[in-house]
Image 1: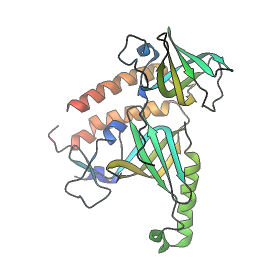
Image 2: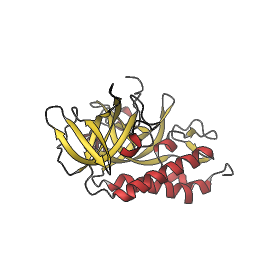
Image 3: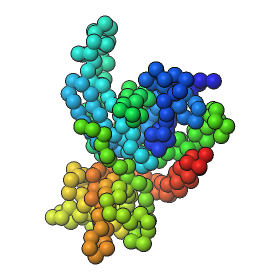
Image 4: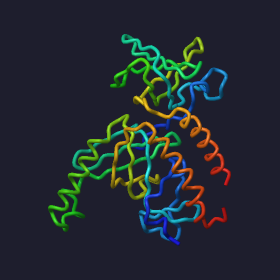
Length: 164
Length: 121
């Protein structure tokens, strides 16, 4: 069952960073495995501890959730990228506006909940961000930890094909 | 460019940062939480407390409004002075008033237990 493949799995950073490319789908840049279960999307909550902006291209940042640092990339090149040039211009402008809004929210020290596709870059696993929400309630980080633990035990580990 | 060598701030309580603990390492990264007791405007050193444990935090690089009595959380590196006193050089910090402290402490224990389980499986 590939039901985890189409949902944003909530993973602690140490867990996320140990994802390996899916051996049965090596050409898909967005296919990774956790204990034999294919995943494509993830969600994390943590403090933004690094931020590198290339205007008009991308924002690279890191999320520290206390168990590790997850590298994230938010693309900002929609208006100039050939990939988007074939699509409806007003739709592309909207996507670019939303991305720019997210980029402005990601500042050092804020706690952000990010969702996106799991991708690889230079041998390291990262999140290509599709959604950002700032979490102002200090208990949000704690809730995320507890969610990750509960979901791993009750759900994600149950799909494991490694006999765990 | 290149891959950043930034370390995650390990989750510890102030009690666990005393000189006899294995955590007490120069340059190690931690995430600490405590109530602000004093703040020296000139040196930008904040003293945070948790129970009977205290920690000095160098907040020089932070744009944070520090109020005595509020709870704060800092991520940074531990530096050990010649007299074996430690202070945290904070990279980021935030006000965490409203944090459920008991739940926070319990969750740290749960996290450690979970991490150990996952590594062993």
